[in-house]
Length: 241
Image (tube, rainbow, N blue to C red):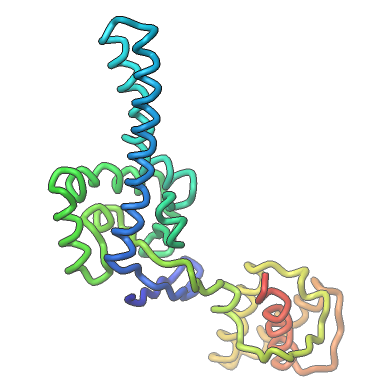
């Protein structure tokens, strides 16, 4: 698998694994198997209806109506399940935006429309060639939509990317640090690093006072030690969530 670094709108780097061609094909085959199962069920239903309705056009109409879920499968599954189809769920992969922003329904619509060229019109050869020779393993639809398919098996949580590493036996100091949200911790981290980089100790003190006020705590630690401890404590309590 290739690595993909996504920089979110909050300037937080998230590292992902881009799925291989084999994984994409396997996910598609799982979905295709579901199609065949569904088609078999449709055939049973229409055959049963044939005993009731003698008009062939009525049976054909029912059959076409029942085919719609397959026709729009990729579109509504991606929209409803956040970039996943059943095949992607099994393999723990999903569609994400290259810039880290949320995938919009219009992006999924682009992916769905270009499946005609990538997969159906040329027996999958166009999509396969694009995936094989593109840097981020994207098919034509991915490139047009600005998306990529990544693995979520070992996804790095945002709380881990923004906080320091801590040992397994780390003992937290401030137990009520869990009152903070991921957004709070991220903003604290960004302000903390910026203040250290620019030697802006006034902002560091202001940040420390704000944290003490929000958490209703007081500590003899120096500003840098205090904020660093807060971040480590937060990481301790959230790393297994």
